[in-house]
Image 1: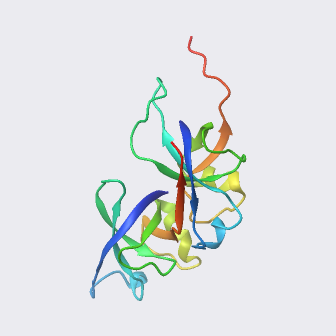
Image 2 (image 1 turned 90 degrees about the vertical axis):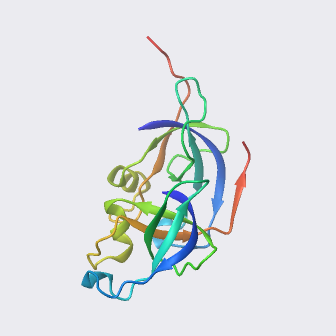
Length: 84
Length: 89
């Protein structure tokens, strides 16, 4: 998984049927990576720091539904205790 | 697998169920001179690693899931070992 910041959302009315009703959020990989569109699986909102699961496993956040995604937001971060 | 250093702990109360009850570690991949390489990664802990430890991590779903005992769950990275030493031939 990787750290990300929710910087916006994407509206798409014509899309894969399995994406219906899912929130499509724009997430920038921290510290300064690219922005990707990830499906929200935990109720994240704009401005929040989250972490994103990539690849095939991202779809498991929506089991048993088969959702075409390779990026899902799987946690909203409260804090990070960073030492080094 | 990669060699990385644990550089922090992630606290997240609102998360996917499969991530419950597991330490969520922030790890920094290392190159062969133990220097940071690339961005930090979030990985679930399967071996009770702590900040400062040099660890072995898997970055692929199936191995990550099985190491933390949650198959078919949204996990794509896990710490699966603590490195004692790396010996070059």
